Amino acid sequence: MGGLPTINPELVSELRHKVLTAIEEQGTENFHPVDIERIQKDDIWLWRFLVHQRKEISWAFDTAMECLKWRKEFGTNDIKHSEFPSVFEEIGAMYVFNKDRDGHRLVTIHVRRYRKEPLIAHLTKRYFVYFMEKLDKEKPYNRISILFDMQGAGYQNVDMDYLAFMFSCFKTYYPAAVARIYAFEMPWLFTAVWTVVKGWLNAKAVSKIKFVKKNTIQEFVDPDQLLIEFGGNNPFVRPTCELPDIKDYLMADGSLDMNRIQDMMKKKVHFAESSTEDETSIEAEENIPNQEREMKIGSANKEYFLTINPSDELAFPNVEHESTVTIRLTSNTTNTVAFKVKTTSPAKYRVRPSIGIIRPENSATVFVTLMSGFSLSSLASDKFLVIAAEVENENISGSELSEMWQSAPKEKLMHHKIRCCTMADSNLFKNDLNIKSPVASSNLTEKVDKLLLQNIEIKGQVKRLQNTVYTIVLFQLFVVVLGVVVWQYDFLQEILSSKFTADSCLNPNVR
Image 1 (cartoon, rainbow, N blue to C red):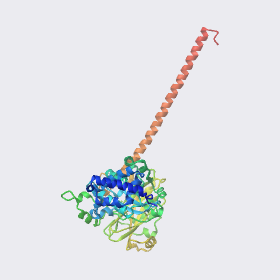
Image 2: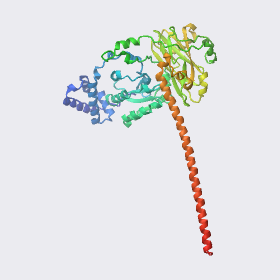
Image 3: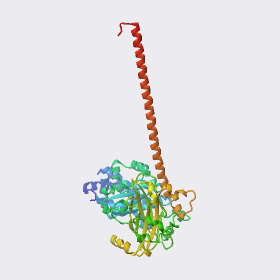
Image 4: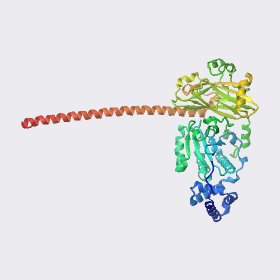
């Protein structure tokens, strides 16, 4: 499972001869020596071109030659891991984890963790090629499936140039490498992006793309192979960090100071004060044990080893259907941090992951979904409680973690409360014209996305109103037409009746 069809040696030999002849004719200096040697010896690579082009020699030849020229121009064989700052891996935007049901290695790409940065666009593309090359060399006979995680993604994460480059790699430069693409929880805002992407692909490629949600992805990926945040059972949490503002790390010649970027990533970052509400309001939280209600829920300070964003309130869009928001947990310590997230209304919310591990100075994203069918007016009484503790073993098992929560001393635990509200009631939006909080400033992008959701809601209401108006107008038009028809019928009857009376008077024999 997960591999290519059985190699046809005759087709491979024919393609090899055709490609090597073309290389000689065009000059070996125009191709990389590593790639020429690979054409000479690597049957699997040639077979992939054939599989990709339905075993048509001429098509496979054209694709292979285009690929070879691109590899020489792009410098694919010369890419080294040392080119890239460690933050490229630490942001956790792209990694391999487990397999789908067909046995294909699953490459997860978190779209929300990518940010368009023109200053490092070429470096970003080279990193993607480095990533694909690494996969290619590890298991050249096995194909991959790509899971584009679009939860929490917005317009700031869209880079059409980078997306076009990725699909060019899938289409030409890494033939038959991708078995399937899963677009997970694609927001409505990405519909236009999909329309463009679809135009780049043929029908066969389009058929490989599956749009999935938490309730359908398990058709393609076993729950035990799927992370909790995707609706599966696997508790693994990928350590993450934030991508720095690239403009602050430019040198005089316009190039990036990679050393400064690396140094910055090692520094601890603290948010401004969190909620300062007293602990008495937690008494309403019936689903949280009494001993935990008594623990302090204070404001963030130097002793806090975990910072939380948003820190005060979790604002849900004013929509009737299911909606998801995120809580960002960032470690401020050199120790591993365990966390769990509780709510006063467990039947109303889905929290993924609700427990997890965060490695030193990394982050985790918790997805909180408000289920459909619940009244938005009841959100004001709901709260979330984040509990965290430092642990010595980053490979702690689930059973050990459960035991730790039961036995940990109160003074070793950090508690933080977040209230729920709608965006209409959110202080973040009420203070838009007078933003003073550093936390609010860091959430500008998030606010724009929420405003876009509000805009979608308003457009939906306008559309429903327009439909109602159209219905009324059509009904009135129908009434008018019906009235005209009835009037014409009565008028015609009157004329015929008058004509019959006149004819009777002129000709008494007419009956």
